Length: 130
Image (cartoon, rainbow, N blue to C red):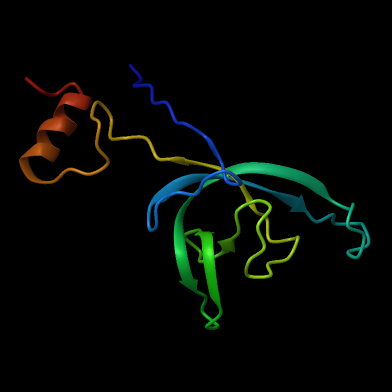
């Protein structure tokens, strides 16, 4: 039996998440074409996909560059909110069009539990609870 979760997608042009919060991020961009001229901005294929990321109001890249109000993935790739270029990001930086807070733990209204609460909630979600 599955447990359904709902998320509210937020347009990144209208509102940004709280600092340091992990989110689901809808990324838009263009995959390069294998056989086309790389200078052709219309070569390749458009994409729109979802990845887990976190939002931060201030991020320092490995090279020391500072970014503001950006999304960062697990590989350290920095992506801007759609339509914002405050840090002079390029058109090919695959911006975030929408974001959503991650769903809560199954059967709960929270994202994090520890100790006995974690054991009980996990057992209940797995059907092992009393």
